[in-house]
Length: 140
Image (cartoon, rainbow, N blue to C red):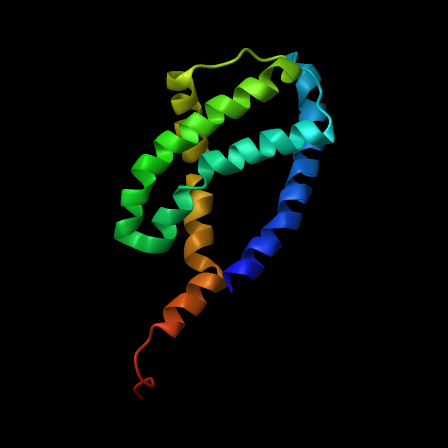
């Protein structure tokens, strides 16, 4: 079941990168940033995905998910710093150091966190997981 979920995320990644590119190119001239092509939009998109990925652990694994969030935050901040350094010159942005990447990561978590929690709690995978672990037939 997990493989199909990963395969389902692949088209979502490409579609969200396309939407990111289109929206970025509309907004960028107004805030004096460079426009981006599709490849650069994919790089920005994977940076955002890696920054927000540990939030899903909290929504899916309840209490024990918090143990994965703490190292996930620092690792996500490290990935944001590395990928930001690759993408920033082409976007017209300065590169950032590790403390600033931690600030970018926590900002993205605050912006996307409610969506991650709702998606993890209400998705069909959550219902399938809870129904699979029910012991015995339902009582009338």
